[in-house]
Image (cartoon, rainbow, N blue to C red; front, side, top):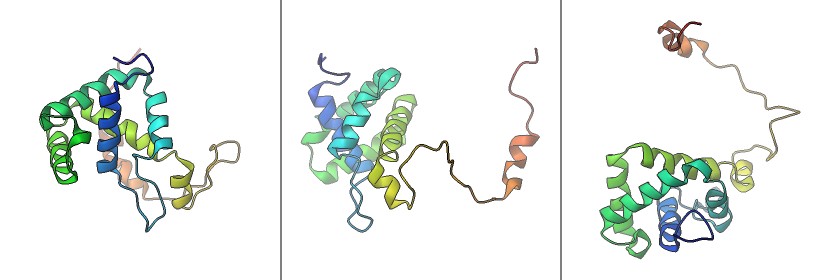
Length: 148
């Protein structure tokens, strides 16, 4: 285990490789991929309590690939990533969530969505009214909490 961060160098390389498979760069929308160095740095520095599950997912990925993912050709990377996705589990869900949250808070990505990259407060963001009937199934289910 590296003392510089929560991931070993091999895991960091594999994280970059799987992130590129998950969200590749787009010239059409002028956005970086999730393997962008700025986004990768954000992922690694904000892992926190998710580090253990992310390491688990990356180790599972390397096991499925029988080698470090970063060492594979792009077609094989894609196949291994799809295999991991199909397998699922808490570690895979955590890896996916961490990559997505860091990607979609990058200023370049936020701008590409037509939003101003800023905190939601104090000005807030206006949401258009939607179809509130979509919440009816949630309202209809019994409470999930214990009454005091």
